[in-house]
Image 1 (tube, rainbow, N blue to C red):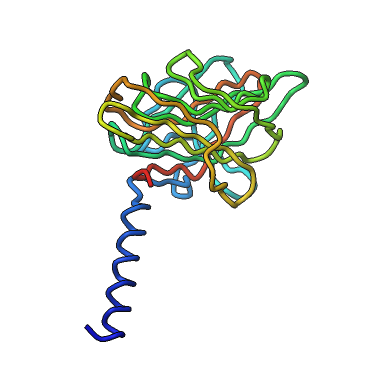
Image 2 (image 1 turned 45 degrees about the horizontal axis):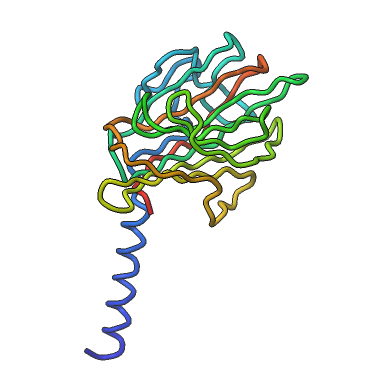
Amino acid sequence: MNKLTLIGTLALAAAMHCGAAEKTLFKTDFSDGETGKVPETLMVLDGGFSVVEAGGNKVLELPGAPLDTFGALFGPAGTTNMAVSAKIHGTLKGRRGPTFGVGLNGVAGHKLMVAPMKKALEIRKEDSVVATVPFDWKSDSWTSLKLQLTEVKPGTWKLQGKAWSGAEEPKEWQVSTETTTAPSSGKASVWGNPFAGTPIQFDDIVVSEAK
């Protein structure tokens, strides 16, 4: 094999590897969504989700009332080696703030939640917090969240989460936990509880294969 052929082969292999590592399974930014309605690609579990215009952009919005936890499912149903990410916007009102996040494996799966009143980033399993780290959330700003589930060895699965402001995703995961309970098959999700009485907005939702 000559030098040019070798370089070409290595470049192709690298491209194939990167493509496989970043394979997108579902993606939406709501730009094609009809205002006032829920996109057909989403399954609303409860809550008044709808597409709205915001700052010249279209986003998915959960209204500021009633005060409860609401969610929507999307993408393919999976069990493991998947990741979900989304950008979420919320606002403090007095001493009250929203909670919001993303999830995997359906309603009963794990969720990565920002809890501003606790100043925490949490991984939850249903209503139980299974891992938490300090997190300084900024009101009236977009926060990106990413949750990943991988099987690290037979019978053991790892959940890893991160949250950040700005365009650059941090390289390191901020919160993680392991479980020996096999994940159930289910869709990815977004969640919000408008404790502050102000709307929660969602954008740039992506489901991908775990890296």
